[in-house]
Length: 345
Image 1 (cartoon, rainbow, N blue to C red):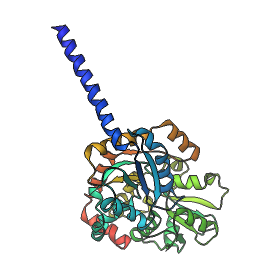
Image 2 (image 1 turned 120 degrees about the vertical axis):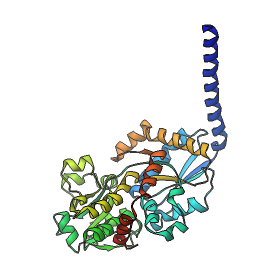
Image 3 (image 1 turned 120 degrees about the horizontal axis):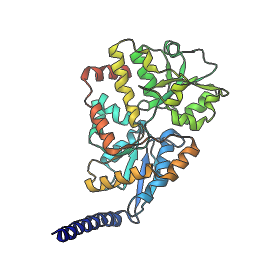
């Protein structure tokens, strides 16, 4: 009897291995000799572009069939151009996905009209390349010395366009906390804004990822540059900046209503670099892309490259991102309305 049971168990195990191998082989013919486009919702040189290209360099070797993963910049509307393309016109078979700003997910919650172009609650999420802490950088010769002074001043903050973090985060702080910061838009990307800071065209930038700031200014914490990390736009902050007692904008909340609005808006930092796929993508192909993405973000070569570039890698799985997005879309209407008003939606 025991002998028959052992034979039966071995047969089951062999069958499981055969099924797994067949699944891998089944995925390989589709992706083999194909190109997977990773559309990046920004110009070159910024934080989103940095992470998009880092993922693209390593992802293909983890996908059965080893397709060529090609990064393609599609700036516009704070990443909305990519989101709309993925949702409506891009191939639905997994050969075209996008990496976008979190505002692409948040803004349609705040504006019904944006859902005519795409619905974030219907995207399938491959994963998130990085959970980010956003910061304000300010020139050292700018007058404000504390976040409270920044909010109360007419300091000139550079930004790209409404819908980007560089615009929405300072605009949100103005609206919720009664600030007076002057936001100047029209810059192509975050790198163009920081260059404008260097030329003293603007005095600061907010809504900039800490990982991006470290790439652009590796010596920023040494206190020798023209700029400084002024505040963290996050719920908890980054351990490295917390150790330096860099203040949180959250600390300026005047009441519970302020705090709820700040927490809702800043929660998008958890999925700062989401990779979106069309709603129609096949479930088995999405699962394979999710598995390969998770393997990519653990790849020793990717992690070594990220360390050399001085950027952090804190990924989330596609399943985790979908849960976070669903939770955000369940925010109480009164808090949503307050955030909408703050942003002038």
